[in-house]
Image 1 (cartoon, rainbow, N blue to C red):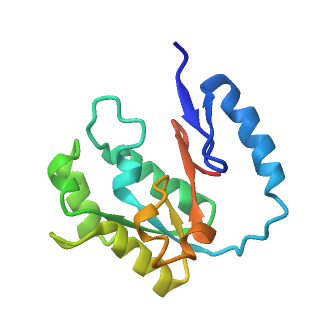
Image 2: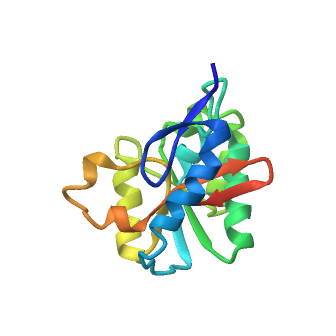
Length: 161
């Protein structure tokens, strides 16, 4: 059975071999929607760490790849992770080093990292990089849909869609 994935624009399911063609057509349909270009982006670090995790473990390599990819296109990423991530990730000391260096912000234990991401994006007037749709927060923060930037990870880096 072929693997399937969802289009980040219309949320329809497609087989992997047809997904790229559909995304190209779907993006062309919504191209007339103007997007304000913001240089700062808030990255959902937990979402990125779990991206395509076949062993159900988050990977620090995804976070590092995302930071480097976004910086290479002159964006200023602010990565936010949950407090629980450091207990589950494949290399917790590397994550702690990124937190200590100021490259990653860890949500306080007991707080919702999604809410922290949303509040930081609102305060800094930044876009949010995540494949999460933040459905629980749309009624309170309706602007999320305009600032949400979906992504795909490849071996060479993170690609914004």
